[in-house]
Amino acid sequence: MRRPARGQGPALRPFGRSLPMQLMRAREAVMQRFRPHLRDHGVTEQQWRIIRALVEVERLEIGELGARCCMLPASLSRILPRLEADGLIARRTHGEDHRRIVVSLAAKGRRLFETLAPRSEEIYAEIERAIGPERLAEVYRALDQVIERLAVDREGAREETR
Image (cartoon, rainbow, N blue to C red):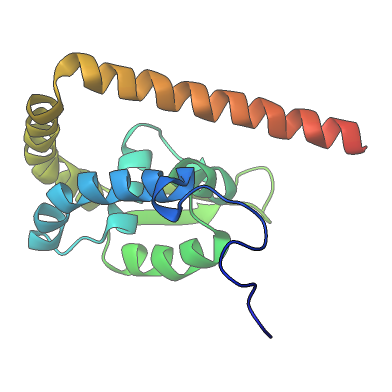
């Protein structure tokens, strides 16, 4: 298949200014500060997201856990058995519906969280110093607004197609 000659075809913003790429670059800039700490404790980013999500609740159904962690079911089905085998989480069937699985943080998982949390907070403080507390608050507000607005638009579009 032949590509359109330069200057032909749809006009798009430069690749480096596309919102998905900017968000990925920002995520990478943040995560490069956390990765060595996680790696030192043998924890992957995905495993840490699961532990972080579970530390705030008693238990979560797998679907809700995936949504909170922004993980696809296939990824969870690969990661959860390892966390369970390592004694960091517990999985069991839901008390009322045995087709549903709930996940909770095991005592060993909570201890791992308590080990990693202080340095994680130090890293957050370093990020805040690097960009400033006001700018960090602006970033959080802007991201919250983007998420909220685009989620509303997506829900509205679903309603329109029904």
